[in-house]
Length: 482
Image 1 (cartoon, one colour):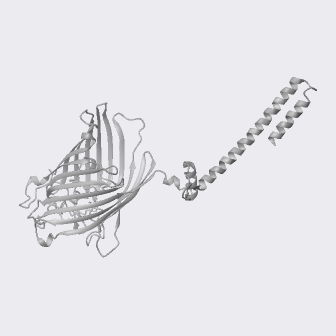
Image 2 (tube, one colour; image 1 turned 180 degrees about the horizontal axis):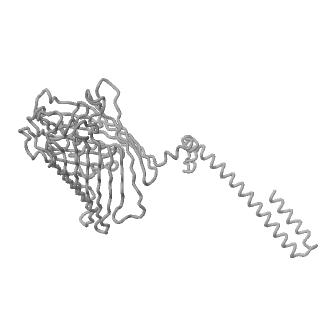
Image 3 (cartoon, one colour; image 1 turned 90 degrees about the vertical axis):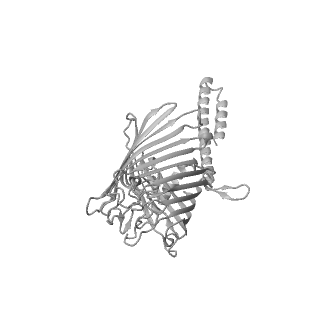
């Protein structure tokens, strides 16, 4: 119709050309042509828009596979996805934004062999275990986030009200005639990272966390002092500093302060608490000797376990968390150390010869406030000291990566709190010495095969209630992170 109208206008203008002013007619004709062309362009645009809309709708419905005949969903734009999600969830996607889920499943085979001790207490053992952890973290804004996580574990002995009495383990053993397995709250916390606007001097970041959270002291320590399953309860504050930022040297530092509850229902002698203080610095030095810079970590810590060793504060129900800390003076409610004020120095150096990471570490700890054991075997201030060193080659990041590590530890009976250090290192946590060899290989980006061997001697041999033993432990793990 638009074309026909244009032709009629042209014919009419031609017939009347000679009867009127030629210039006026020419101007009128040009004006009419412009109007008709604008109308035609509008019609064309409308038709193109409708055609594009039809094609877009069809593409979202399905796309036929040219060869196999399969029907596949077409790629969807972020806007379309948001609209569909909003319709399906009634607006709940606003809550799902910045919500991060994570977890892991580990299957373990573990074997024990004892080289000495009372045969009735040291039978060889084989067991299968699993560890399951799952949780989420929600970021509300750059300054505030909260999170919680669930984890497997094992209920305690009689008198503990069925609670998990091992803060150093989230493992569950396949046992008890197919009985259902327990799940516990592993973490429940909130983190506030205040934004002070422009950077104030050398202060880079401030973090305040409250609740049951990941141990903030792991960065400057090893499992000689802290088992990686321990999740303290209370609050901590961390301050990060940037001291030097040059072409050849970067120097960062941090200070961490922790206030944690151990046992708040003490009837006499006061409640048990942990007050922790850690200062660390991290120089990164660029050198032509290696492809990557030398990365150094140095940390100094003080852990004041106030009243933990006294008035039964190390008991959960009828279960003791002494675990290698002697208690042979006849007072069942007092540990021989008297108190634990543990000082720790940690040093780590990472180099990259040929691009492969090689990490060396040393960890020293002592309890100068502790009394030597009254037992004749462990009656030595040397039992207030702990030392460890190790090396690790490689690192697990993606499929095909591997790592191999060796560590030696000697942990005096009164040097650290046996309730919270490595639960796999012998049967008593403290009062042990020996070697650990570990290896890992990433089968995929998410699945890792791990192996470990522990060769541990008991330093408390001959003390009351503790057998003279040498333990060999072997572990094979298959871990899946999701």
